[in-house]
Image (cartoon, rainbow, N blue to C red; front, top):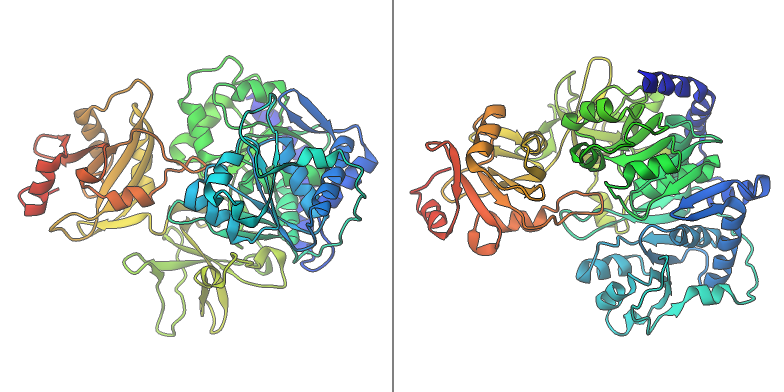
Amino acid sequence: MRSRSRAALSFLGTLPSRVRGALDVMTQDPVGPANLADKLEDWADRDPERIYILFEKQRITFGEMRDRVRRRAASLASAGVRRGDSVAVMMHNAPELLVNAFAIARLGAVVSLINTNLTHDSLRHAILQTSPRAIVAGRGELPAVREALGAGLAGLSVFWEETRAGHGTEDTSGAREIAALDAEPLPLPDPVVTLGDDLYAYIFTSGTTGLPKAGKITHARAFTAAYGFGRFTLGLGEGDVLYVCLPLFHSSGFLIGAGSTLLTGTTLALARRLSVSRFWDDVCDHEATAFVYIGEVCRYLVNAPPHPRERSHKLTRIVGNGMRPDVWQTFVERFSPGLVHEFYGATEGNVNMTNLFGISGSVGRMPPFPWLDNAFLAKFDRDREVPLRDARGLCIPCKPGEVGELLGRIDPSRVTMRFDGYLGDSATDSKILRDVKAPGDAYFRSGDLLKKDRLGFYYFVDRIGDTFRWKGENVSTNEVADVVMRHPVVELANVYGVAVPRADGRAGMAAILLMPGKHFEPQSFYEHVMGALPSYAAPCFVRLLGEANVTATFKLKKTDLMADGIDPRKTTDLLFYRDDRGRTFELLDERAYDALERGDLKP
């Protein structure tokens, strides 16, 4: 109750900032001068001793950060970086990553934020996709860069930087230490004036279903995110501390975390990575008043044993996306984090909404003004995976409670309704749908299925492609995964459809990672899923994962799992099939698989 009162008082106290944030978002000029790096200069001039970053034992002021960014900009300029160039940055969370990003922006160049989990071909593809002028890598990440690019490093200028408390031993041959350049008396380049529609950053898709694509983030979009989350959603101001343990190469960490704090002059409490065991110590030690989450972080915390400080914090609101319904209420009741501002939006998308009042399960609603609401929920053909059309060839709107694909009207004159797309026209064109509400209009395809209630609040249902059809019924992988992850021994679950010999449609498979020290109990699992799901939706197959092959946002990668299907010869993981007669799951070995192929065994 005390936490709710604290959250309510905080919300009322931040109303002026939230109103200002809403106005800023609505009036953002897509072509006027804009560069978040300029905000660092402003805050350093206004209050140089104000703390900008708390990182492990470091306390970095706005004045100190400005000086480091200026020196780094001089170093990069001496290396040939100019306005419009791309510079790839690959390092784990550390202040140095932001020093590089803001220095690159100061030069009018574009930071390409490389996922530190990428290796080999995926890493080479991500680095070279933006044709960078140079690469700045953490010393610990340098071996992966060298392995991906080859001994010649693809002819690129490569710099390395130590981002750890100690000194690493990784081989740095072929790369120059950028900190050594910082120490040289180099001329300070003048800040470059950039416009709203100039590029600020490349942020990559997670690559769960293929090679990562570079999403284009303009300066105007970066400001909109900072206004929308920093001011409107969170109402950040002096005295606030925003805790971020998500990777800075991800939009939540970089745009919401770093961008919001830089715009509002708020302290950024940065963690090197998520540590469930240290999470509440960090939140309490840094006196965080808010944090940025993704749903899997919240689930990890719910599944963790009690922590002595998990309710001793000063949190009044949190912001993020992907919190599952089965986690939401438990998380709020156990940790009392204040208002949960779940939001909906994609890095490259043009439909964004926020759950401003913490309504359980909702991703928010669009503004109650037609000229600000560009969302359209279209009835969806799950078999062909396209929106349904009427006799005129236009898309059909969903009624309250109906599930459809969320589309966003594209309006190049408004920052919040633009679609800048990806690097590469084909990837961008595939996300645009025309003739939606009127002939000739254009909408962004979100690829997400949502539903809306009579009050206009939206609820996420599933990703398109994450549904499959079995026994003549449509099955939502998210709904099945929610049930599977409520089983007491399951740590992670990835549900998808697999082809079965001599059967139409696709049967459900649950690839699961067990909690440490736990064992798979076939009968218990059978009773759990069959007791909560109709027979057609309950998994027909189970795969026990030896390790979690996850993205940086803790999502299990599906591509390889789906390619393996149910063939035990393609994996060393144990596979099981559902035995309804025995009310259990049986081992799917080569003999059982051969029986499936002959039709002697049917799921």
